[in-house]
Length: 85
Length: 555
Image (tube, rainbow over all chains, first blue to last red; front, side):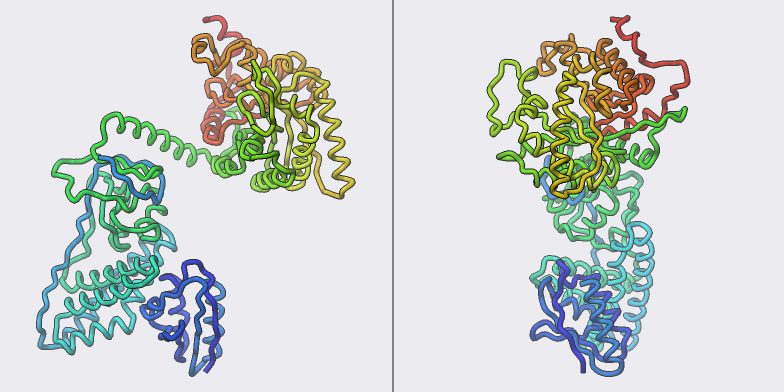
């Protein structure tokens, strides 16, 4: 399993559009990918779940990947977050 | 009736009001026996909903661009969300209910989750969930999605509008959106901004408008909705709207076009600005440069003498924003009707003819040097010219040049970069006109300030309403002076411009061109109007609309 932490810098937080795009990025990989804020951890491939975290600007999230292509998945997710959020 | 709201986009709309009727889905809970078939029905409807959303995405992409269209992509993803699908399907299976009921209940549950969130933006998303569920339900019920049809353009009043409702509308018919709810993040607001139509939110719209056709006005600048406006209000807004439409038409037709006459004569058409914030309007109206940058604002807005740094920052910002286009900064023109406390100027009997402008600067050299240093420092960042107001003698220019030489020597000594700055003067006193041949030897350009020149020449105070019938902006004396200045300027190698109010008087544009003016500088909002006029003029043709020498004859 691999994971990394990231602090959201977009002033609107993970709003609908980036949530959708993030879910799409995650869906490209066969491994399990999750996103967690505090205690709450959700499946990163489910848009309602990701949006339900309600991640705001300045909050830290943890992205975890486990299984096939986990390394590539982590790289792709981290690149996405740095670029858009 | 006058209702206040919050504007999300400026503009004025006048038209009939229509209240948007939401299509209500009456959903009955039914027991189904074949749950598998019901699940298949739901999944088929979901696929159809996704197909419709894909179409809406394409439509929105064309109409409002990617940002506005993205929501329909999110909606498709929501319809494929495993949590959502599982919730609907398990409800059908375990409770043996119809697909419509399961979709509606699940939609409610999910939208309540969003509605309960702290974040205002996320709360808005509750509407998205309802929207996708309603789409699926419509399909299950065999109905199409409700579109609003109309023959005539109208102002749309609604609680709030879902994205799919707005995209399905015939938007060529919508003049404005006014909603009870909504926020600056809501789809209606975003859509209004992309469509460039006025929109208000948070308006307490009455439940009923009655049966007859109701006219309304939306003032998107002030956030006001008028229902049944009186004739005076209506007329006032009609005029405003016409002015706005003309502006829009000019922009569309003339932005990016050259300022050139039919016979191919080019002229520099610049804008007058009174502060850094006006640059945006000058650029939006396609000004070829700044013909008059009044520097007084720096002094008027301040409690004490503005520092060199403050001034430098303002001049540099404008120079950079204009990206190499000419910026003509006029040095301090305080006194007369513009008073600043910290200057401690004595009260005068006749301030218009008193201690003002260059007279103060030449007396208070440190003040003048501070401004000139700031201007020369900023010259490094663009194409800056400087001009001096209220000149009456050659001696004044020589004194000014001495100060400039000192400033340049200091900058050189301090290793601060600057570029050569074109030096010009305002011609706004009859004295300057009469010796314009001598003045032309000393400077690079003239810019005529017609407001003061007219008042000094006619000895008429513009502020005095009793004198209106004696005042003639096109007075032959003034027109002859203009011609004299152009001729003397050109003989002495100067280019000559006009930056007073008269410059925007399109009845005189042809006269100015024939006189030989090289530049006209007007307020930003007038730039395109003057450009339109110039592009319609042929200086080769003999028909002259308002030549010099004619206006005095019929008086």
